[in-house]
Image 1: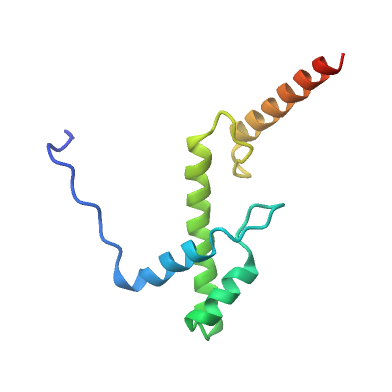
Image 2: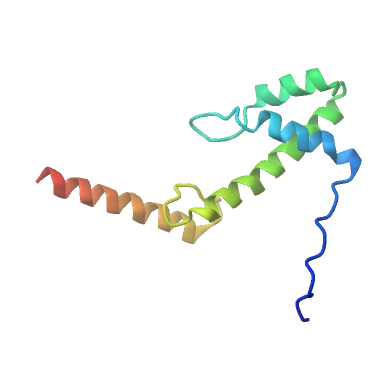
Length: 114
C-alpha cells in the first residue's frame, strides 16, 4: 500500500470520551513517587468533582485513566529508551537494558572510588 500524497486529518475524539481525556490530564501529574502510578486518591477526587456517582462509572473512569497512562508511559519511555529506567513487566529486553545501565553506573562509580 503506497503512502498517501496528503496527510489525512487527525481523527476527532468522540464527545462521550472527552471527560476521560480531561480526567487523565487533570490527574496525570499526581503520581506516587515510588511506583510512578497516578494516585488513586487523585482519581477519586476528580470523580467526586466531576459527578461520577456510581461504582460502575468510577470503575470505568479508573480503567480508562490507567489504560491511557500505560500508553502515555510507553510513549515516554520509548522516547528515551537508551536511558530509561522504566519497562513493562513482560518486556524482558527492556528489563535487561535497565539492569545493564544500572550495572554500568555501578561499575563507573566503583572505578571512581578506587
